Image 1 (tube, rainbow, N blue to C red):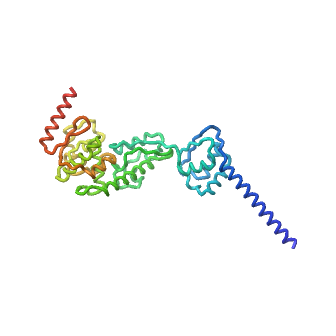
Image 2 (image 1 turned 135 degrees about the vertical axis):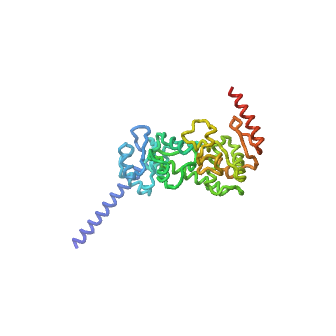
Image 3 (image 1 turned 90 degrees about the vertical axis):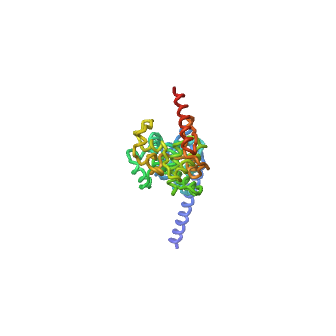
Length: 342
């Protein structure tokens, strides 16, 4: 009997001890959760690296004197069920925030954002150069060929030209060049697939990739947005009549780094796969990164029977239905430019 009472007494003491410890932990956790953090300065920048877990984050917070107890931070994250939902990035932390605020900030991804603008009409090579020059983006593709880059993105059999959407992208520190390209690729696929599904009837384009090729040529032919459907109409009409597109930007793309800024008569005769003066139909790949307006124009050309256009020298073009009208326009506008240059 005495042994039984002793065991019950010990058990009761254990229950009491567990209750007291639990109460202390709960009290400390609640205090930790809602008390303002005491930063050594008014604000600080805290970086969560890609692949970090809640333990390493808590330890880094403690080392930077943002919080006092890493284990309470870990426990708070587990209690709230967010220990696996923290996002990498660079965070601005200010005095007056609480541990609760930090977790919300880290899980919502409210990090400092940087931006890079990819310009409509850039080539893939120009896009890569801009990414490589960005001081925030982590470089993992240096020295890789286009084929290796596309394989790393998960698209080993695709040519990269034209496959990335030109736009202004915002991103946190820790973003890699691979992350950036994959995002731009996915955005292009979203826009292209939507536009392709809503295309006009009667087009000779066989696939969304053909639309991307034509859009890239339209993008390089004019900077005037209102002209894009007219440019598209010319190319669409030429394709219907089995006429060669005869567009200079394809010549320039085919010359690559050998292009010195001037197209010469011999360049029109140089047999590259992109020479639309020699080869009928579309080029084998896009020649640039087309924007949404160029893609839309390729799939919704204007109602026009024009077969020719020539630059007026002011960023716009004169459109003609006959060769005679076109030749007259060429002479008129070329003469105007020659007189202006004198």
